[in-house]
Image 1 (cartoon, rainbow, N blue to C red):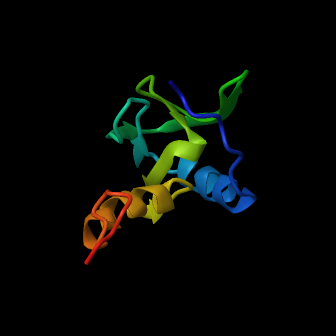
Image 2: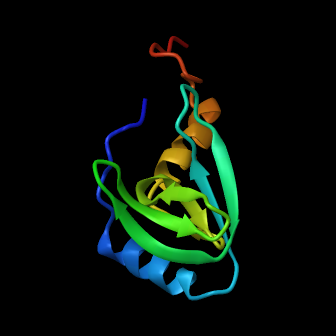
Length: 104
C-alpha cells in the first residue's frame, strides 16, 4: 500500500528543477513495499509531473516515475525522504534497536 502523498517543501522543488537541467541524474528513493526498500534511477529527468491522486513525480527518460516525497537523495543532495532514511540507519544505535521497551 502506498503511503499518502506528502507535499514537499518549495526548496526541494527548486532543487529538483535545478537537477533536472543536467544531462544525467542519479535518484535514490524509497520503493513502495511492506519493508523499507531503496531503489535507484539514473538518467535524464524529462519533467516534474502531477499524477492525479498520486502526487508529483520525476518523469525519467528511462520510464521510471519517482514520487517526489519518497526521494532520499538526488545527485548526492538530500531529498524530502532523507530524514526517514536516516532514522532507519540510526535505529540500531539506540538502546531500543527496533523494540518498543528499553530495559537496562
